[in-house]
Image (cartoon, rainbow, N blue to C red; front, top):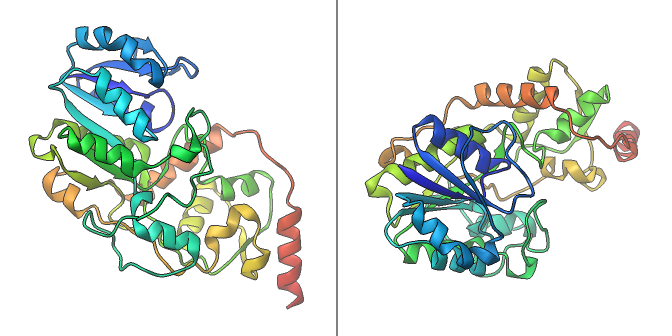
Length: 329
């Protein structure tokens, strides 16, 4: 297939591009040019800001795409601008998030509203996302307009497919999802203050999710459908932490501390009543896509991140304060 990828130069996008090229697709990456995809296959690029895609409509048409994957639409205007510039006819896939589910709001609110696992028929939010004020690094959009539900609606109206992703980890993860453990490993800390750490939060390995996104693009039955893409088995936070430590070759002592004393980057280990656990059963059945063994994926991810350490903040005063409280109890 001839496939346009809108975005595609950073984390999930670069995994999608690598997956497509490996599968024999001819790929055109459309991006702003601020993050050139070093290490990706040699494919053509079109440098354009999302708000300027209309001026590139002729170039997009000349590529004669069979498919389009949008990995970077964050707002209604992002989706509308892309769809207006793209030719009619190609299969469309929009990458979304499980933050569209009502349960995601409940995690933030400290309430319990939904049974898990969450399916594509589970209730979605009836308001804006709770983290709307946060602007993802490297993206350019008005946070007051951010909403994946708006993106989904626009693409579904054009017969597109929506892939809802979980918490994503893996190589080139600029958010360093495993970093809350690995930065303490690198600092040779001996203890890690945590809460109950029983929270179930669906995760997915970027290369595996990219394979699922490709399946959604290629499968005729995917048109107009929504799919959760995630690991079929989800380790509770405590087990995930232990896996990260084991693959990093260390064994920090996990010390239970009061939730109110948890350092900011460890808040997810606290007492979170509403789980955010999604089911990939529909993708398994329709797309014949199954996520690889999560433990193997965590190992690969941890090995990559240990070899590519980000700049670190060596301040562990909050850890020491929490650990002191635990000792005093």
